[in-house]
Image (cartoon, rainbow, N blue to C red; front, side, top):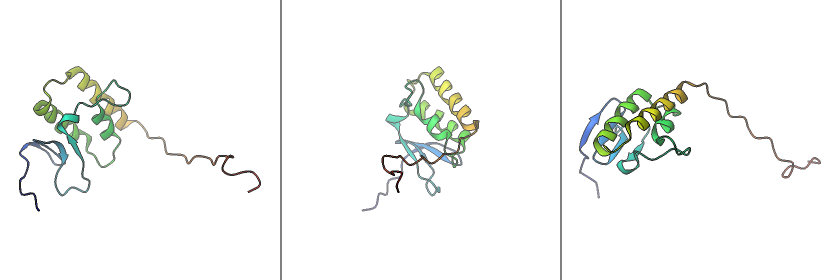
Length: 119
């Protein structure tokens, strides 16, 4: 069975769109990402900032300015109860995280427990 219903679009830019379901990448994009409307104000692990600006800030494929534009439109449409200073602080933290130099991942050293000296 094919779903013929297309969700209503309230906002769209070159990478993201706000629909009746939430926030998502445009159909046909290289990456598919979707945030349900009820999860737009989910808190980050630190419990002090909204999650999505911080999550999207570290993804190289995301145009962060386009994401912020769509995220703000999604919140205005779906979650007008958002704490706006909290939202601004979350986006600012995402911008800082976006421009901060990334530390390359260093492979963990094998544990002696798993690799005894005599091997």
